[in-house]
Image 1 (cartoon, rainbow, N blue to C red):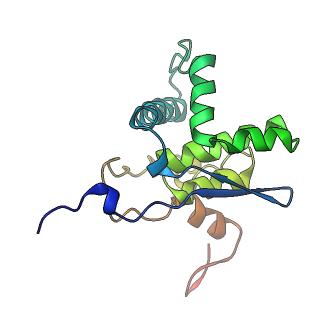
Image 2 (cartoon, rainbow, N blue to C red; image 1 turned 180 degrees about the vertical axis):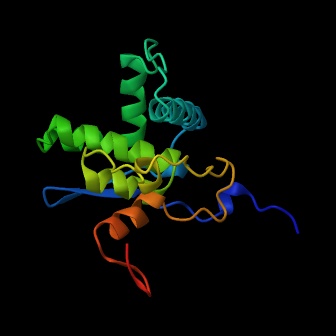
Length: 173
């Protein structure tokens, strides 16, 4: 079997985000440049390193600038496309634009499920995982390269169980 031309593969749908009753459509992963995708991967790696350092009580040394203002403007322009100007014209607030950027970055760096978590939290911090609160070491996470069988983000499952909902057939958590 031969590989199909990538251009013949089904296109990835754009990300559509609702803001105050208006739906805004943003370029999907297949519509951003390779340079932007690589930059997002670099930012994602630094974010993961910082999170691990913080969780273990280490100082990550965030003195270095990860993304210059110029780079951030270019990233925002590519992730939002022409929709950025439409949002500005519609009077979308800075907080809403910031959440759009965080959501789009999560979508491109991780998954659509993670992007939904970011969007629906609208800036709220994620609850710590149950094992971390109990002082246990977190389970090793799968490598970034294994996407074929990646489960839904564990935070989504943890939230339902922590809310007292039935987490199994035999009871609640």
